[in-house]
Length: 56
Image 1 (tube, rainbow, N blue to C red):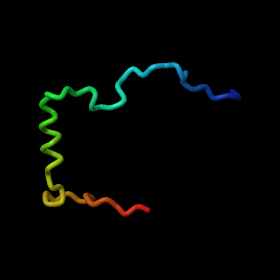
Image 2: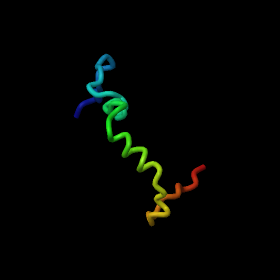
Image 3: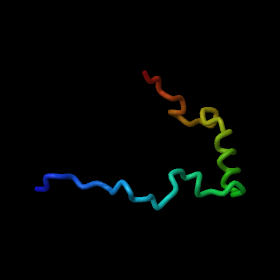
């Protein structure tokens, strides 16, 4: 049994961008799909669980 837990080096750089948005260029067609889906009224389309639960 080891006595210490080894973690990642603090000086290690990341391989991937921090945000998924960094992968997609501004003129990529997927941005149109993103805007379209954001504008859909999920409740009107019959989806359940759309309303967020109250948190404290």
